[in-house]
Image (cartoon, rainbow, N blue to C red):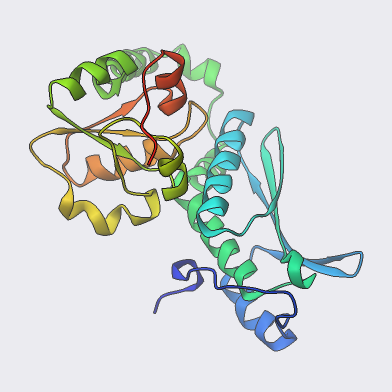
Length: 254
């Protein structure tokens, strides 16, 4: 049966009922890692997400922000080294609505897709990065990584040439509003959350180049991984649309 994470946030107007204690118990069972706390008489839903470094915490913050924009329900985000605190409540009714639990479930799914939970469970038993880098296996892995980086990343000017030659499919995985505001000419918009059910419209005979906002956004990386696993030829635009514009390349507005 589909869970909370598959739901879409419903409309919530001032005066809408708060979740009852009974309903909160049922909904809370689907997001067991979230805690309910009360601040100045207002109940809120909160969870801390742990990361091995600041960069990944920042990437996750950016991804949660994109998720909130897509569904029109925004949390309080506090980002620090190795941790992001996410707090949901519905301002219009000064408390908790079903939408808050829906967004909590979606945020859990986003965290799960990032693979960080698995990384964190291995963190304390693994060697340090500096120790691993000194081993022959690590040096071989580094060579393979940077070879792959050249193969699977596209620069803005390289992508522009390939768009002009019509031998590439450009995929914008941001939300629809961001795409409408500005996008790379010729790009098709499929938000990351809708990608799995839209693969049938993607070409198998062309390389698909994914992009999102910038270097700190990992939506396009997640999309590229999903497509590669499904057998598509795929690359990622380094630096996203921000790098594209920094290089003086034009964008379209819908």
